[in-house]
Image 1 (tube, rainbow, N blue to C red):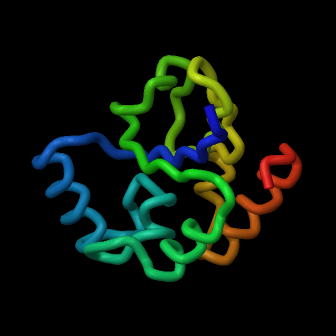
Image 2 (spheres, helix red, strand yellow):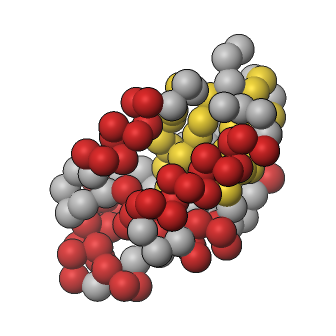
Image 3 (cartoon, rainbow, N blue to C red):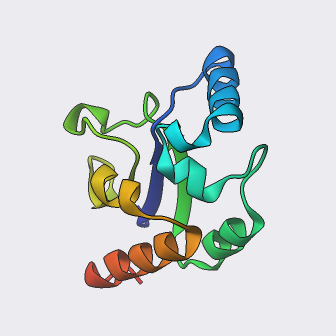
Length: 122
């Protein structure tokens, strides 16, 4: 299995959840509980700068809601970014505390680059 970068959002699947998240981001973005989503998405779609950055990475990227992530039993805090190198485990490269401290997309890209370099994934 080729390594895969997984972005796990602090949100759940389902139409009602998506509508609630959309309304929360639009009405009160400062209190929205998924900084990964807030940094990488505008009101309706993924930011083009982020999409271009992801396409330029030498790893496959996967975007997942927390209730869909197969390793959720091992983690309680979201959002997070994980590196899956095999079928049965994923290593967290950016945890919720770190992601929630980031203020903009540039900080996210720098933190991700540093985390992946330290794990020899880039």
